[in-house]
Each structure stands twice: as C-alpha cells, then as structure tokens.
Amino acid sequence: MYTKIIDKLPYAKPFLFVDELLDINQNGVTGVYTYAAELDFYKGHFKNNPITPGVILTETMAQIGVVCFGIYLVGDQFKETTKIALTSSDIEYLKPVYPNEKVTVISEKVYFRFGKLKCNVKMINSQNEIVCQGTIAGMII
Figure 1 (cartoon, rainbow, N blue to C red):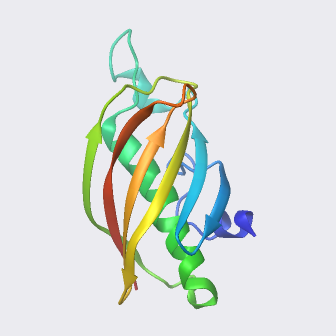
Figure 2: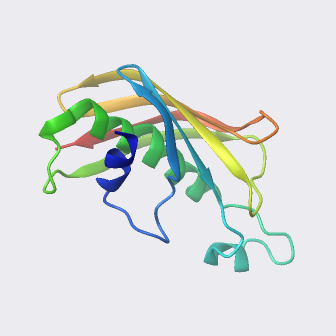
C-alpha cells in the first residue's frame, strides 16, 4: 500500500525526496529519505563543505509529512487531476544534513478539514537527533 502512495506523488527524480514510507495511519506518517552525494545542489552549497539547503529539508518534510499523508487521508478520492499546494510552513533548523545522510520524517496531524491538512513535522538524523522541526500546511483540491 505504501508504494502506491509514493507512485501517486506529483514529483520525479531529481525532485522526489521520498524513499520509503515506514508507517501511516489516520494520525500521522513516518518516512525516510537519503540525500545522495550526487545531487546537484551539493556542488555549490557550500564550496568544499556541502550541506543540504533548508529549503530542500522543508520540501522533504512536506513531501512525506503532508503530501504522502494527504494522499492517504483522501484515499480513493485522490485522482491524477488532484491539485496539491503548500499553504504555509514554519520550520526551525537545528543541525546540518550532509551528503549521503539518511533522515526520518515524522508527521503528526494537527487537523484535516475542507481539503486543508496541517501537521507538526520533524526530521531526525541517523544519530536520532532532531535536525529540523515545525508546522507545514497544504491544500488538496
């Protein structure tokens, strides 16, 4: 079932930041992604000390924590013509994420009504440290 959700995502490599969903239910989702060292943004962010840009960390949390979760919540009503849009994010960045690092995203539903999904989302590194956290909301139309 989880791979069917990932297949419905409106993203493709190199802008797909979901490797696997580990758990999903009516209250939240957990998924993982590994940032391959070959990703283009590492070439210039930063010279000789590459780290993953915050905007990419936010996108990863949004793809797993809001879009995958929203597809699950909508269920069979999700069609190829369904539109998904980010409406707000408030993220605090605490630690860097380096090339080849695997992260886990954990999202918990705040509310889902009238097509708007708001979640508390956090990203954890392989040392079980929170690298960023906050709230993300989106619309599913």
